[in-house]
Amino acid sequence: MRNTYDLDSLPHPGASSAKDVAYSRYMELARSVEPSSADHATTVRPIRTFLVEPNALLREGLRRILSETVYAPSLAAGSLDEVSSQCGPDGGTVVLIADASREHEEFCRQTKLLKEQNPNAKVVMLVEQYDLNHVLTAFRSGADAYLKKSISYEVLVKSLDLVLLGEAIFPSAIIDLLRDQEARVEQSKQTSASEGPQEMSPPTKGLSVRETVILRCLMDGDSNKLIARKFDITEATVKVHVKAILRKIQAKNRTQAAIWAANHLAASRGATVS
Image 1 (cartoon, one colour):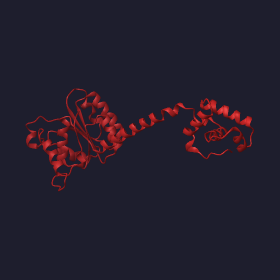
Image 2 (image 1 turned 90 degrees about the horizontal axis):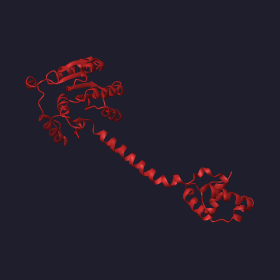
Image 3 (image 1 turned 180 degrees about the horizontal axis):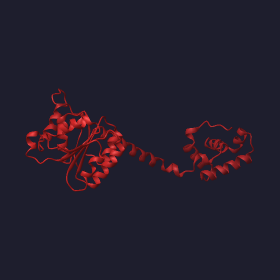
Image 4 (image 1 turned 90 degrees about the vertical axis):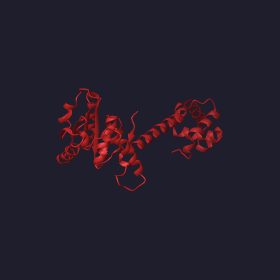
């Protein structure tokens, strides 16, 4: 399993905060891989890199920044369609750095197809801001890094180094979201399990309003004569209702009916007969 790094929470060099230690450790790890500086670029074979950025000015800026590293773009384009043919299934390692802010769902779909065609492709998505649902979609599609465009040059280059080592880089907020989802699923399972026995019992809606109030009377221990007086009906009519109630709730006698009522009707006491 590859490690993950949350670069968004790390401070920039020179920041005086408790996170300086975390940043320095990250940079120490990043520097342990092959350097990407201009001095080393002449001795290390360049990584086939493709840059996709619709904004021409930003695209040119990124191209110039990366031109001094082993990630000098072989091609810088305004859309993924312009470079997809060169990232094809030739088995070689390629790095795709692309803007994922526009048409995010479509870009993720194309990313998934690219990764299926070339498992060695590394996809680094650049966005203006984090959207947790978008982050989930991106990594399900196979993205290797999900970075804000506001990160520093040094963090970008070192992130590319780590991606080549098989690491994944994405916001820590996604971890919290996944934990929340797991908690909700577990809670749903527990709720379903606790409600299982109730689902086997006959539904309350199978009783008429009159039968429901008579069932409440049975729960209170009322006799047929008392029930008849309460609702101004004959005892024979009460017996008919009681028989229907026992059949509907699958009870054998008045005692079982009272127990059933205590478990199923307690939450809605106070119902009246219209």
